[in-house]
Length: 98
Image (cartoon, rainbow, N blue to C red):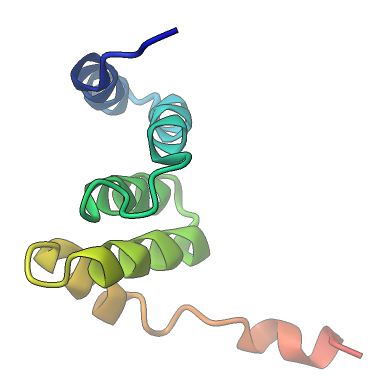
């Protein structure tokens, strides 16, 4: 089956507006599957934004970082997010690692 990525993007945006961010994440992950550049970092940026919305800051940091890796000159909002999320670490888990 062929998918219209413009329609998928619009639907994901509509889901976010309707408070269905988890469903938008599913669409963006589907779109990113097999796309090593993440559409020049756009999908990484969108995934980072979505994960921030739902409070998964570790995932947000990862996806914003991927967006910057793919297109550092354009993904400035993701670059700012990476700086903002720099304090998101696993330090609190280190005592549990054996």
